[in-house]
Image (cartoon, rainbow, N blue to C red; front, side, top):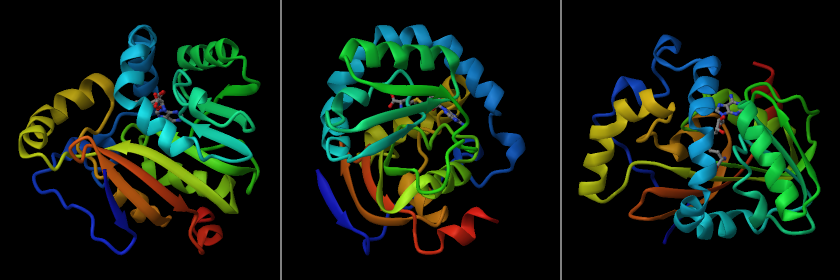
Length: 240
Ligand SMILES: C[S@@+](CC[C@H](N)C(=O)[O-])C[C@H]1O[C@@H](n2cnc3c(N)ncnc32)[C@H](O)[C@@H]1O
């Protein structure tokens, strides 16, 4: 695990294709409806392979989200893979755009015997008042949001000013072999799963105007654990 302070520079990747560059025009991006269709197709496999996901990412989910406090919003919670790693004391609220995944997430709450709520909702238009949550968490999601900047600003809006936004994301590996494979697969992967495989999440978070307090990388630089706050000028940003 490599720890970097907020003053460190992030990787910059050349050769990113248009498809997974979030600055590309809206026409190049999947729409919300496209994303819903993709996850309706994949929901069964997400459920069947949840054990594998736990093997690959469980440690990172625990490490990043085990320190969530108070009322916690899990944005794009999918099938609720993070719920088991949240402290027992936390009050869980999950949202996701995919109806089948919302159902799976509700079932996960039940299986775990945890109380909480899961709603179908767009991360880019959260139906919560400003400052509603002590902690906002999200995993492997900014790569999928049609406009991650808007979704991140929404996370900042609903997070209390003294709260934390905890993200677990993936990006381009610093291992040349893995990195090259990711770049080769990027366009096909986007078509199949609506996921920008080589997006640099720390840059996306900074571009959205959030303050990155700390980020760590793991799994050959593929995984990013990012801790951020809404940033001082959040009120101004959300009204733009
Ligand atoms: C790669 S999955 C990650 C799911 C879960 N966070 C996890 O770690 O397993 C991406 C999730 O983002 C959701 N998603 C994509 N765009 C969304 C949006 N605009 N609003 C809410 N959820 C969205 C998808 O439905 C999907 O569940």
